[in-house]
Amino acid sequence: MITNLNNKIEQEANFVENGIFARKNFLSLEKVNKILEDCENIFQNKLDNSALGAQATTFFPGLYSISCPTLSINFNFLELAIDIFDVIKTLDKNINQSDYELTNIDILKDNNNELMWHTDNTTNMYRAFIYLQGGSDTTGAFRQMIGTHSRDYTINHELDETTITQKNLNEKIVTCDYPVGSLIISDINGFHSNCKKETPRIIVIFDFIKKKSSYNKSI
Image 1 (cartoon, helix red, strand yellow):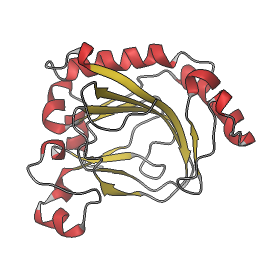
Image 2 (cartoon, rainbow, N blue to C red):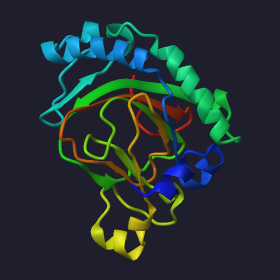
Image 3 (tube, rainbow, N blue to C red):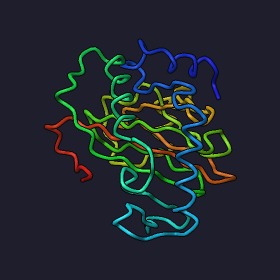
């Protein structure tokens, strides 16, 4: 973890330049534990019931999703989404709340290897997530290359080593090694990945997309 970059992404005024913001202890441990208790009941029973909003995904082995936690978890995630977007509005003064919509709330549990560096190639989209379990550099901490959200070159999806070297991107890597309850807000047009997971990581994800965006949206 490069400490000076972490200090930089914790400052609201730097978000437009960096494309990433982190706030420690955004959600109290009491609330985190409340959510986790319900999550584990679903994960351990491996429910596959759309009526409960719980399903075991088939994207990768060891990756589970609670795809509609507003139905299956006894917690007000919509109120939390409002609190998160209130933070987003402070990060970029040009953001107009009426231009954006909440398109996804998801809880993920996984213990896969670290994710490759890539871009989602989306503009006008912010992904916010909160660590419920893990979040260290050995338990799936999110990583991003600061400033790459507004790059002047195109990458289809996965970032190759040649580009990393030519663009000196290793110097831009910030690792969000933060305690549970911490909030990360990312412009995921930037290059991002996550760290290895020696034990499972659980996160809750919120996607906010500009209404006129052509990017595919969750229901």
